[in-house]
Image (cartoon, rainbow over all chains, first blue to last red; front, side):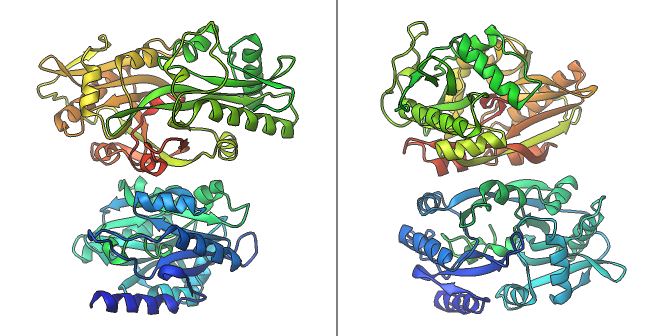
Length: 287
Length: 345
């Protein structure tokens, strides 16, 4: 696929996101419904259609004006806040000037786990949305992945995805959506019901390890808040914590959605980062 | 400028110490009155200075106080001055709203007098305290590891933002080999004279400075805690070093690596330091070792490969750059620090 075809395909995919809007510079805003204190409002993810590349072949970046336009437009949309990831220090300075606040460096938990009992393939349907709602209920802020959003983000996505779940009787207990890139099985989203012993987390980790082993002995890679049960579970099982090149930035339009809450109680997922705004997503696949 | 009827002062007196103790006792009923020796260590004895601004009523009552420990910071070989905010407070007896306003005014006064580029402004130095570097030079970067309420005030009053995470690493004692290759271990020997040169030569691009003078103040002169110096030499020259302190955790003790320095590419020295830490910890009867660092530190991965386990700590490095030579987002990505650069060691 040529670069132009790749850009067109990505633009078409972003345009199919429920409620997506295109801003200046090819910066899309994709709503991520996050019922906050009972109100059905959305965070918006800032997604690059196809950032330019500078003459040295390095990553391009939006201008300050484009970032400010996006922030103003998101606020006018009634969004809770506008989320972006940045991969370069120069873009971070622009984001700061455009009214974004740094939530933190995105950290990954990475390594190999002993494979366990295989999981089950799970269709991304209403049952998943029910699980997500149940998992999210204990967090102050987390995207509600309804079937339309699930279908667009995963079923309709250019990358190949798999969904691995574990059941407790008839009940879906935990589920991860993953993609395979480079030498890692990358967890795009992870939902597990809370239990005192963290058994759902452990079972899901073991099932993913089994998928990774079958795919050629891949490592598992999870990007998630370090306080999240998923990250804590994998760290406790011996995986390694590493920084990524990306940082998470948010322009908040809701006073209660302050930095403390965003850092400590926002259960964000890798799938909500629709690509750093200063490099082409395809360049990030093997990062 | 202070509000009408208020004054800024820069001298430590009994009223300031009393107000400090009252403010921290209000936050923590277990707060113990700070000794004169500790006050002196944290103010007059700081090698690069410890400037502060105290906001007082015309009658001299302390309303709010903002201060920092000055410290060198290297950015691409250039030495700048950083300030670790410590001991900041607003008077406990003030009504809540008045407390917030007074603290904000103290913050603004401190920034005006001590932060930015160029020579310092503000009121003259106290005639009783010696002139220090911080009285002539402004802070390029101010930072802290605050508790949450203090961070809220810092964000509002000083524009502090998140710089780095505070990651805690721990490992059990006894997991490292005993080999030390061609390095010799000396415990609690005097700081060697080639330490400054080793740091200058091998320092990461963005890091808090280490000198013998600073280490003597930070650890040897600290009246509130004792430390163990772990020095590794190769052919008589310093190769790596660390400082350990004991922390009680119930009946057990943990050895906290409050400071350490190993040149970036010297894997033998890094391995030897791990063995030496084990040896010291075993000798003290400590069950485990602990340290803290930020995500920008390449040792985060290396130490995990050597058996340390990482987890998120309760704090965060927050701060604000006042100097374009030390851009805040570059500090976020590169600044190297240890527990010695915090008030938590």
